[in-house]
Image (cartoon, rainbow, N blue to C red; front, side, top):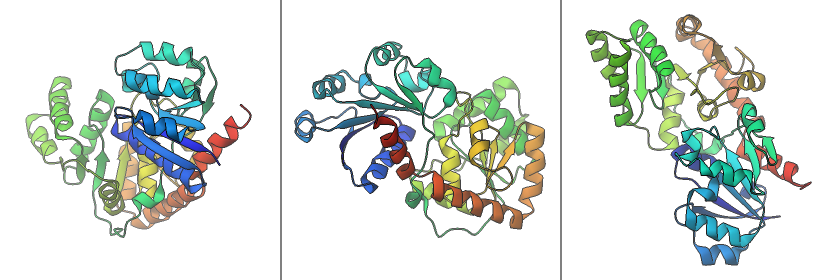
Amino acid sequence: MKKILFITPISIAGALIINGLNEGFKSLGHDTLSYDVRDLNENEILNFNPDLVIGYDYAHFVEDQAENIIKQLNKPIIHYFGDAPLENYSHSGNLNLFDKLSTSDGIVFCWDKEYIKAFKNRAYSLPLAVNPSVYMTETHKKNDKIVFVGRPLTETRLEILCEVLKQYPDNLEIYSYEKHFEKSIEQIKKFNLLDENQINLYKKTFKGFLKTEKELANIYAQSAISLNITLDQGISSINYRVFEVLASKGFLITDYKKDTAIEFIADVEAVYYSNINELMEKIAFYLYNPEQRLKIEEQGHLKILNKHTFKHRAKEIIENISSI
């Protein structure tokens, strides 16, 4: 068994993913130590003397102090990318991070196959996953709500959400940071997506920010439809929301992505749409066919348990690096 140091990032989603991987490795019997990238304890880390370091995106490179501490270890470092390597989501405006990683001995695992070619060093494809136990809930009584959780930003997301609002003004619920929701109203006005009366209806869809995985799970489990709209950086990949919804036994309608469709069978484990018209047709059908929704959400949840936990991903990482 190995001793592994996990470096959690500043981002909420990234921390969820790294913490999930940590639990996956612990479930396999590995000894782990975890620190926030902004608060590494040098003495404890050097005494722990890990065999392997795992971080999110650019990991320790984002903080000078962290970089100096990890450099002293002289141990293999894994960078698990859940964001596009050349976009602000991952490098936070510091383009030097990509050059640092490219000239290092770091090993890259990337959630989207399309970005593998961007890395000059060793890179492997590794989908995201989930810790199902965190999303277990007793709440499965369904209402008639269509929920969207996340930033209601980008023109693509807003076009879809506004169309859903027009057809289902009493059903749509949006959970996000208040500042992101307020910004979405500004963008709706800028893009002229809704009239004044519709904007007032849109404002009523805001239900606040969900702080914990249990809160998320309850919303997904009790809602008729959980809507996923992948950010533009996800070219072919499965985003984290897909795993969260299915782990919660929620009913998922998501935009078509090649890798998602490979892993989750269409209309058996998840439902896909390729454009707004198709989305509206599928919402109209599944909103009023709860028996069909139940069958699909149960199969989607089963696929998560059998193939897409962080324990599965930990095994894949070990298998890939065993020859290095």
